[in-house]
Structures are given as structure tokens and as C-alpha cells.
Amino acid sequence: MKKQIAILSGDGIGPEVMAQALRVLEWTCDKESISLECIPAYIGGAAYERYEHHFPQETQKICASADAILLGSVGGPIDKAHLPKWKNCEANALLALRKTFSFNINLRPAKIYKVLRDISPLKSTVLGENVEILIVRELMGDVYFGEHYQGIKNNQRYASDLAEYNESQIAAVAHQAFQAALSRSKKVTSVDKANVLATSKLWREVVTEIATHYPEVALQHMLVDNCAMQLILNPRQFDVILTSNLFGDILSDAASVIPGSLGLMPSASINEAGFGLYEPAGGSAPDLADKNIANPIAQILSTAMMLRYSFHREDAAERIENAILKTLEEGYRTRDIAKEGDVVLGTKEFTDKIIENL
Image (cartoon, rainbow, N blue to C red; front, side, top):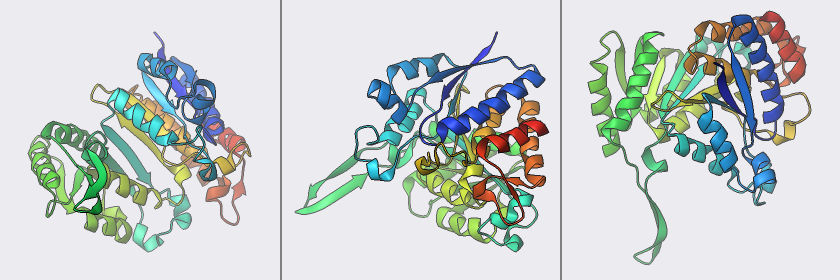
């Protein structure tokens, strides 16, 4: 029986990089004897044009019946953010997806390709030989989902945002982080603000308890301000970073610039049933749309993550990742990651090279 994938191409560069990712997926599935069916649906501004809703019921139904969701970037031009098509587009689409399917864990890898170290904002001496960080972020708790209030108090404008966590939420994401570490360097750095916040004190307690189930994994606790500094000073010390929703949002964006381009950054969001959403970490870049210059790597790597986590095909995922690496080693680049002497190719042509290397 074929597995079904909901294909939500999104806005801006989303449709064109999605088209290239699907070319890679189709080739890989053919060679690896994987039976998948791709079902397209609308989200974001593209959905609003058709349904006047950023996450319509029609799309929800397709996603609910699928075995995984492959998502492109959503959102429109900043100067048009006031228009109905784009107003609150990302929140209405992405937060609604997370809430509808209870995606409680986000996986964001940040990998430095050796052949691309020159485009990193960090010096080679800082990067060393290998930087490959996985940030495991809780998605359904914290200040994002607590009560928000803005009004008047004591004759002054006043605002408050409630951060909440329970032990089950923390335990679920902690297990995911430790399990990921088992197949990596067996080290988890749990990031909190336990010297100040009650939620962080609970976080540290629960993570420490979960660590006893994984005696072969080393656990380190680190305060978030120190972690932000260490990501820049010595990123190679990290393997798996486990953290809360707010801190994960900030740290994953900080880590995403270390490889040198958001076009290299995939991500996955998974719920407790194992159902997954896979998307590039960057934005929709409407100024680059339909020019055949966007970097498709993040979307293609997101597809590899889908094969790994939703369909348990590590072999197929590695095949795609190795083909991307070989293409880069051969000197081919898209414009955003190119330097003097590289062969700069368009979105489609760069994907052609990846497929040749598959």
C-alpha cells in the first residue's frame, strides 16, 4: 500500500524549490523501491487566494489522511503584510498546523559542510573539522501558548505573557533528544534559565530524571545566555541541544546562520504519534521567486528527513544527503553559497547535478 504525502508548496520560492525536491524524491523512491503518493494542497497566501483562509479545511483533511506533510515556506512581501492575503499569514498557517496535529517536537539540524566553511560567518579555527548540531525544541508549551494580556494596570500600559510547562511535555521532548543522541555522539546539552525561571527549574528536574533512562548518554545543563555565547565561540562542543519553545526559537535561528545560508537548513516537527511535518527553515523570499536562483538544498534535505523519521528509510535519506555533498564537492553552487571560482547554477540545474549524483 502506498504511503501518502501531503505536499504544501506554500508561497514565494516555495513552489519552485518544492518541485525540485519532488524530482529528487521521485528518483530516490524509484531506485530504492519506495512507494509514495504525493497529494498537493494549498497553504498560506496561495490558500487565501483560493479559499480566503491561510489553512483551509480542505488542506486540513488532506494532511489528516496523509502519512507525512512536506511543507514549503509561506508568507509574502513585507510591504504587503497589511493586505488580507498576507496579514498574519505565517501564524495562521504554521501555528495552526502545529496546533491541529499537536506537533510538540521540532528537530533543527545545523551542519557545516567542509567544502562550505568559507561562507560561514565564523572563522575556520572556530569551526574546526566538524560542526553538526541537532537542536531539539519543544513546540507546544512555554510563553507561546500561555495567556497573553495587554491593557492598563495602575494607570500605566501593561502587558504580561504566561509561560507554562508540565512534566509530560518536558519528558516527551527529552526522550526524543536522548534517543537522537544515541545514534550520534551520545551527548545532550539541556538549555534553560533555571537560576531565574520556575519553568526552567522544572525543566531541569525532569530532564535529569529522563537522563537516568539513557546511561550511555552524557547530560550537560547550560544556561541559555551562556549557550548563545558558546554557539558563537565554540559550536563544535555541541551535539544535541535540548531546549524549550522560546529558547529553542532563538537558539535555532542563531545556529542556522553558522552554515552560511538559510538555504541549507531543513527542519522537522513531530507529534507523539510519530506523524511529521518537514520544511525548510528559511522564509519564502518572494523577491527571489520565479527567477531560478533559489537554493533548493533545504527543501531537499527536509525531504530526506521525512524519509528518515516518517518512513524509517535511513538508506534513502543518506543517499540524498551524500548526493548533495558530492555536488558541492564538485564545485557546483547556487548563487547564495557561491564564491569566486565556483560554478553557479540555477535552481533546476543545481538539482540536475544532485540527481546525477544520486
